[in-house]
Length: 252
Image 1 (tube, rainbow, N blue to C red):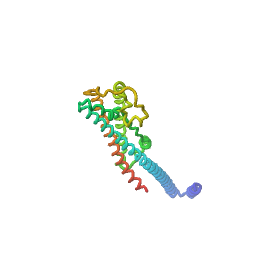
Image 2: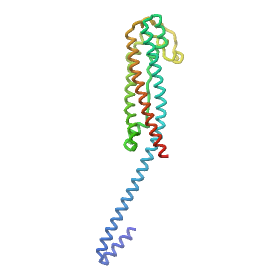
Image 3: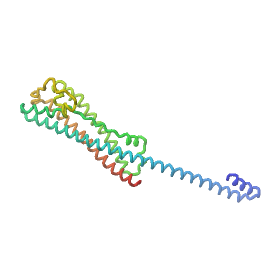
Image 4: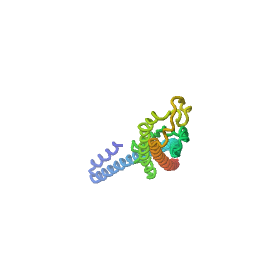
């Protein structure tokens, strides 16, 4: 093809048809430019299709990941509810100021000595965000939802760390010297594989005990805050998942 065009140009020059030669040369340049633009357009179209395919694949994976995380969040929230109920019950028992009722703490103090870790993970969403694909998302609601999820996840981790540090630095040391943990363990000693023997706990020591009162109060406060973080994360995931479902349906 190149030889063919070269032959035409050569013939025009030999025939001294300079005007036609320049017109032809300009036309040839225009054709080349059009060809380049066409090739670039095809390449851009191909890249766009590849990018869409990547996003669609991520959407499906993120949808599956959110489903798992929602189950974990719902389970974790229920666990925190149970701990709060038991800790509030402990405060009620102490507040009775009745020494004969203090033995009832045996059924509730285990919640004070329990610290569940959130242990949420989102490898697919994390990869999606780290690879910079969020900027490629056209749906603003989905984009904002994923950004909010990332922020809420960091907040949840901070609250989770606080609750765990509270347990290791204040609550666990308190149990060492005052309570036979195996006899009050949350969920029962049998389920935890612990022996219910050893020194007995003197429940009378908890009569008007300011330290235990404060430990329970701080525990309730931090657990309520953690549960609020978990529930907020769950609602955000719910919203993002609905948007993702619509995106996936539209692609189908």
